[in-house]
Image (cartoon, rainbow, N blue to C red):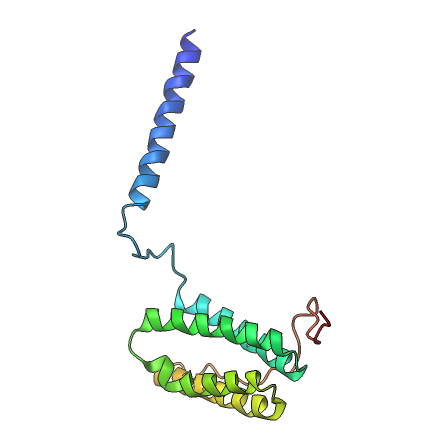
Length: 156
């Protein structure tokens, strides 16, 4: 009987410790982010680079629904970068190219897309230089690293 009681007490102690840790984690104000809730700049930028690559190959294939999706994801990532950095440095460097890209996608204009994409890459590089990260240079991707995704437009 004593071993059973000891197991019940041990289980209760462990459960209360876990609940206490969960309560402590929930003590943030609504809308307040913790470091566990929000990725760091390096992680966000790695996702941005992936989105930049996918955006290029979707545009090159004239898959306009996919380009529209990828630019939406890229916009969300830039919003996260802005939250981390504050100010308007992101919009200063990539705001106009992103708008131009969206227009080219909406107009299904491959030539305008390529030009706007190159301006976006230049804006990224200008932002990197402004933040003393000029050693990070973005360009048009040469190879498609996503062999498991078909970028050609699909008939629906």
